Image (tube, rainbow, N blue to C red; front, side, top):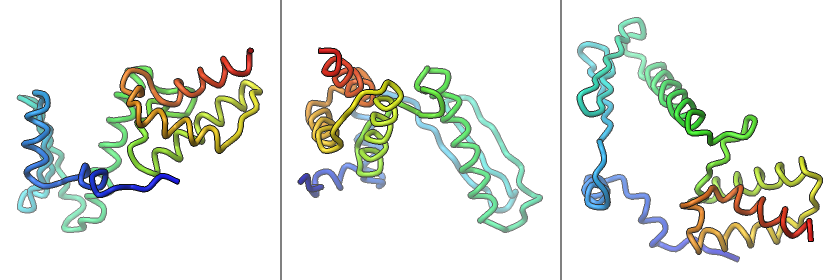
Length: 158
C-alpha cells in the first residue's frame, strides 16, 4: 500500500513562495487572471497579450463569473492538449499521475486501451506498474498511459 507523505502534500503549495520557486526552476511566462469588481470584467494576461472579458450582464453574481472562467480555462487547455496531440479518442492520455485522482485516471485509460486491443490484464499489476512509473519519473518523456500500454502490449505478444 502506498501512502501520501507530507513531502508530497507540500508540493501543492499555493503561496507566493511557490511562484518564486517555480521561477527559480525554469524561466517561463506567468499567466495572470484578475477580476475587476468595479468594471465587472476579468483580465487575462500573458506576456504582452491582454484579453479583457466584459461581464456586466452577470452583475455581482460571482457564481456565474467563476463558472464562465472555468469554462474558458478548460476549453483553452483542451484546445492546447489537442494541438499537441495528447488525445486518444475522447481521452486526454498525457496524464502525469501526481495525485490519487490522476492515478485512477491513468489506470482507467490503460484499462481502456488494453480492452480495445483485447489484451488481458490484472488490475493490481497495473496499479503496481503505475506506482513504479511514478517513482522512476519516466512519464516525463512519454505519457504514463502509453508507457504502461506499450509494456502490456509487449507482454501479451510474447
